[in-house]
Image 1 (cartoon, one colour):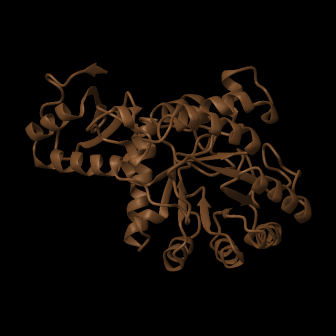
Image 2 (cartoon, helix red, strand yellow):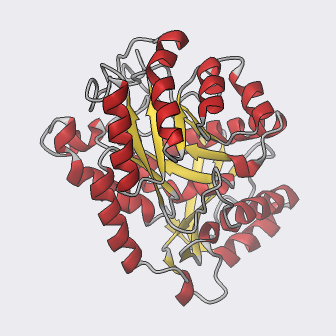
Image 3 (cartoon, helix red, strand yellow):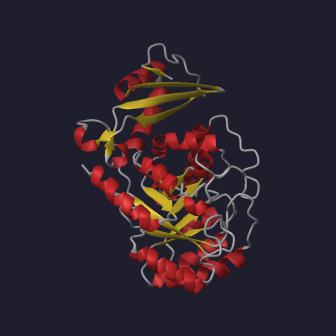
Length: 366
């Protein structure tokens, strides 16, 4: 990757795709007249311009003003794409499910399953799950993400009926206690029933592709949704994941899903995206996506990331079991906040609440 645009991809084809990845993020209060990333704490004067032209990918770092000068020379389609990307990168993000994104938000994991990779069986009983939810709420959880189907690598599919039997009592109980609940499901029937019971956000690992009824249901109901990327299905996704370029391929897929949702009538401010760390990705793929998280702000939505206790942490360290992966989880999560991520999905809510408090002290709002 070169610095500067002298001689850079002078004649992109009509089908070339352009991307902008903000780099060198600065405190917004100190970067006068610089574009502010997603209306948040950071600004940028440099960006990586990426041109994907067929199988060839060109990359260069340059000041944002130079990138737009390059676009003028490359032609009107390039200018229009760059204008669209810069608008998406800089527009402030509206509240998600009624919750302001002016500060990073923590989504606490509450799996009511017997077989989730990290906490399966711990909260399978509704009473223990509700008690854990109350503790998460007291500790500062912004969202509590209730899931009734394990989506760990190799997991078997659960029927919607079994999933509902697990999650509905928990959602009903915690909604009555004032919790802001998301429902982690790929089944339209589960979405519908839990939203009626008090959930306020859909979190779908298939990006509303796993059930033919999920997209029209979400559009008709008006509930916000998190669209996650996954290559393959949980049972087989880790067998041989492959990408031409992990971050760009994930970006393209999410961009298409955002477009499909908007075409179905879902407002952009009701969409968040998640690159799906650990879902059909090798360690290398995960790292590529995590290093380039600022790229995904170009989709114009809130950005959610889940790195909590994921296998790549152990692979980079000493093969620790999931409960022993908190230090690596904190490292990856705080790095994500440093790239403007608005929501972190975490198991260790109490520890992350403290880490977020210190991070916010170090990175004050403008």
